[in-house]
Amino acid sequence: MTEIPALRDALVRAGERRRRRRRAVRASVPTFAVAAAAVLVFALPRTPDRERVVEPSVSPLARSFSVFARPQTADDRAEPPLARSDDNGMDLDPGLTRFLGGDMFALATRDQQTVCLRAVDGTRVAGRCDQIARVRDDRFLVQLWTDSTLAALVPNGTIDAVVAYRDGNRVDVPIRDNAIVVPLPDEIVTLSWTSPSGMRRVLRVGQPSRRQLFPRCPAALGTLPADAVAQAAWAALTNADRLSPGTTTARVTGARKARASTPCSAKFADRTVVVDLRLDDRLLRVFVGVAGGDLVPYAVNPRP
Image (cartoon, rainbow, N blue to C red):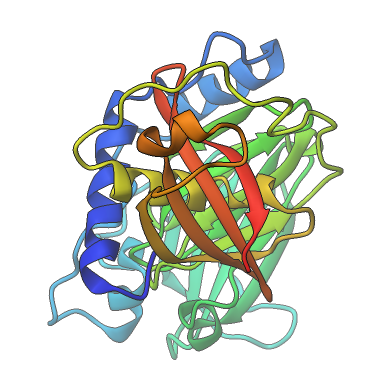
């Protein structure tokens, strides 16, 4: 998440600690978001966000997508309409189908150069495919919408998937078998995640919420934790989709404790971490402090 390896490692550790402490869905989440979270909990067994490490002896396909490293199960074995060759002539391998939950499957071609998502509804099949090299190189992902689900296939090492809903509420989404699967796609504004290289990616689906991220300066800030710099950088990065309209990529370029006045108050300086982000082609300075018990961005300025 940063160009400095030590800080990047610290950000990953901070994110993991924050996720363990955070409740999956806050009590303020509306009914539909609670239902969405419930579907995720029961449809997708809870596993760590980071994909498991694949042994070097496995195929190049499995090194990038560990879902194909595990043995095929009865649930994975696709029905004939799903496993047949693609309409575009791609030779799909029936032995490389994997069930992802709901109506979603991951597939690969016999030459292991292409990965696909497929949704099966009776005899109807919808799908999207892309070359593995494109998905793996940090710029693309295979995504598929159905009436009930938004799904994305992501490479090993992808972490911190977050879905934002129209009313401004946000839910952490588990990543399992290289897949992000989210119900209620009509209510989604953005799906965001951090790629293996530390780049934050934002997929914009619907119209943004009218709720402002910074309606007013906080009345007070809490004391910073010992690892505040790493945690604040992680908090700024995972909120990148809310920091600037239209953002599609974000990366941390620096983070440090504040040394002078902040946009809200000079008394916040010793309780603030300043994080520099590159959002697409823009530079932004984000001020992060402890509010409501969590480290959160509370103000932003264009970076000079």
